[in-house]
Length: 94
Image (cartoon, rainbow, N blue to C red; front, side, top):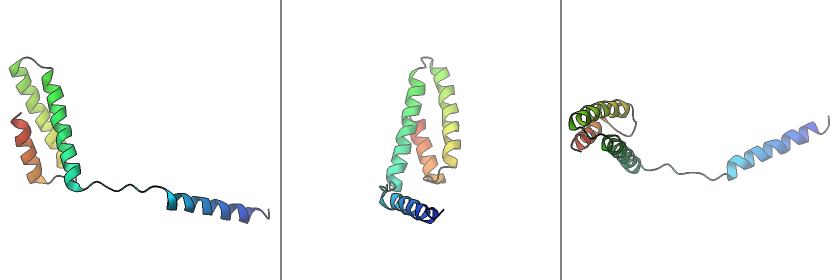
């Protein structure tokens, strides 16, 4: 029982040391993260639409995807309402 305080002290030191010495990751700047998200949506749109040969079916799928993207971006912290509209116009022109 006399070792219990020593064990607790050592384990506390190890836990503190781990959190103190672990590598810290820096968050990405907002414009960089925003551009990564834009590129992800461009890629998703391209891959989904490249499989479809019929132009009417492609247009229907494109509209459905743009609605889905708009709903997703509505809750994204990196995009405000104006940014979402700009991105949707850009993707609609694809």
